[in-house]
Length: 100
Image 1 (tube, helix red, strand yellow):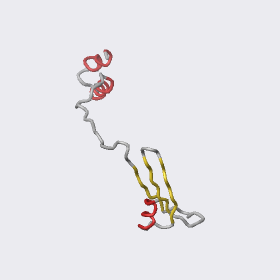
Image 2 (image 1 turned 90 degrees about the vertical axis):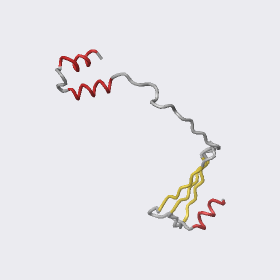
Image 3 (image 1 turned 60 degrees about the horizontal axis):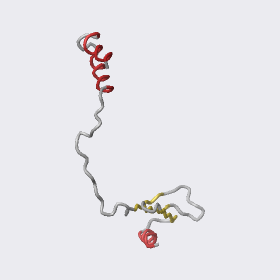
Image 4 (image 1 turned 45 degrees about the vertical axis):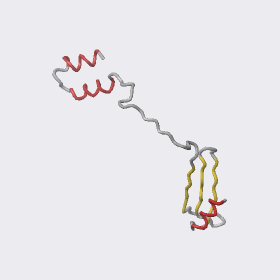
């Protein structure tokens, strides 16, 4: 800090190359440890009750049974994953997957 201070104040003159020195002092100066604003707690009523569903496709080449898509669901609490290959993405296929 002493060397950077001297370079910024006197040795390099009044801001000759000052942008670089100012940036160096800001970059390597004291670091603020506390957040600038208080943190707010976010409370979920069911923190582990989360799941996601994804549709992967169209896959080329198709499988040997002509499946072009994969429907996948994940339960984040139990880490349970279900996947099913399908030939088309009709609403009946997706409803049947969810019901299973």
